[in-house]
Amino acid sequence: MRITQEEIAEIAEVSRGTVDRVLHNRPGVNKDVRLRVNNIIKALDYTPNVAGQALVCRKRNLFFGVMISPNIQTSIEEVRREVFIQVEELRAWGIELNIEVTTASNASEQLKQLDCLLKQGIDGIAIAQVFEKSVAEKLNELMANGIPVITFYQDLDNIRRICHVGQDDSKAGEISSGLFDLILPRNSKVAIISDFSEFICQKYREEGFFRRLRSSGSSITVVESAENLGQDLLSFKLVSEICKKYPDLKGIYITGTGAEGLGKALKSSEMHSQVQVISHELSPSVIKLMEEGIVKFSICHNPLRQGSMAIQLLFKFVFRKIKPVNEKYYVEPDIITYECL
Image: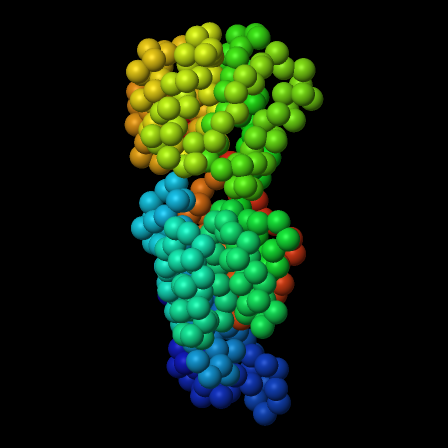
């Protein structure tokens, strides 16, 4: 439990004002008393609650908005829980931080929720998965009006924000390429399935995949690159067609959602035992396909950690005026296999 100045004063048998004068090295304290108080402070390893003291000067508590997309491939409740863990940690320092966590699946919803948060008087916002230009423009407007913005999980080019917390998607693509070289025979044929080409995270994953193939002299050939528009039904159709066209297919790299449809297509085509699949994150459908032996690896970037770090950086910027050192903070990827579940 955190020791207080009142408790130090009680132990030293002096007033709280005397303890305060000793802490700030101000005059008016007897030499012996000063020594006794300093010894107690040292013995108890006391550090002043600077944040709590500064909070007294504020007219109201801090209020952050956290916007999460349901498309994040993890439990929204897990992300929400991680965010509120940060709130409780800050409260332990005497800081009252109010956070409203909202979810939005498209640009119009995100814009409405941003307007709602603005009316409530937010001090800053952390937002995951910025897809549309209209949302980026709104965030730029917030920054221009002095409301700091931190993006996490997915970013957009040319967006104004304090910083971004996320995954190095290009590195993730390179990792996936390297894993295929380890588990597939030479001259193997591989297909890539993405959601939308405009999703920056998936664009960078695919670019990293191809870059590593070229630089490593890999014998793998990418025979198809298709978009499933985030739909399992379309994913099923695309993968079924690819399996029919390339009966000697050895691998599929799925950079986004649609894993359930992919798995059904492989089983329907009776190619689930010959095609090795690498995916991203741990959605329920990916976990199921891992249990069935269809997905061999999933590259995970811990959305929970991303949300937690975004809150910490936003708090430091707003409350302590500490600007993030980096423009982008990357969470190291985890390579997950069935045995890790």
